[in-house]
Length: 358
Ligand SMILES: [Zn+2]
Ligand SMILES: [Zn+2]
Image (cartoon, rainbow, N blue to C red):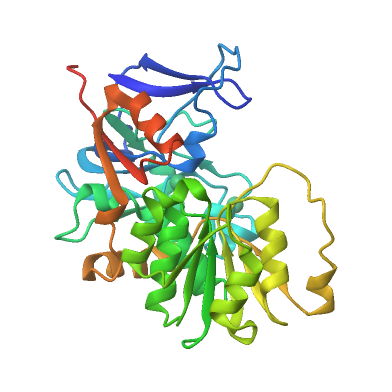
């Protein structure tokens, strides 16, 4: 079968390669991929050549599929079930994060479809869910509820990131306001969760590129205002819209240093800033205001099984709407066009399905 893989330790190194179909051990599950989405985490390797010939991983960590094989010792799952993976492949089971059921924060974790995994990922025909993970973390896969399509379930990863950031990590109360930086899928799902949580003003902050597609979708999904950081004074506009006293939560999904700076500036005392985005440059400004005004910057990584349980229900009920965000549906063989559409911000989410002959 074909698989979109990555080579090397440094950024970059995508190649479409031939790999053997995965073998099913006694505790393993093999799924046939029905839908896989391109994530921002995949984008940072696009069009980067690192010159390495060392295999890293099969990519694609946002995927859903049908169980086509189960090992002889598998009791909880059967052939034909529609499932979505939380992309965990290996965790230690004994560290403090694992003890708390926070498996995606295990320092020894290996993810399906991300770096250094040998099991596989969603950008291929089949993927193995290793039996070992299901022994330690039973909720590593979830059955897709009736009425939810594979392509919708494939977006559970960004949905759950947003749910955890807004609903579990912050202390948002109905009647308050939320500013969301970054118009990618996590930002757009954060808008939806803020709406469900009863925020009054939900302000989406983006850039000029976002005026093409993403601002309209943000409004459709619940943003009350969109602020263009390329042309507007972001701090002044957000304060004007919300009133400083109502602005106690910023969900920062852009990863830009300037966004973190603006978030600290615009918020009231005791505010929370959940930092979902990742930036790779050191900060060039003081964060003393978080001390002076008792503000918190909360780091965000992934989700837990409570997130998954509740987010799946919101998806099934229609309270979380995925459809306006799926802008492109393509075959895996057209992966480069899909990545390019993401890079150009013409796409929000690109769903790929396996379209090779073998
Ligand atoms: Zn992702
Ligand atoms: Zn652990």
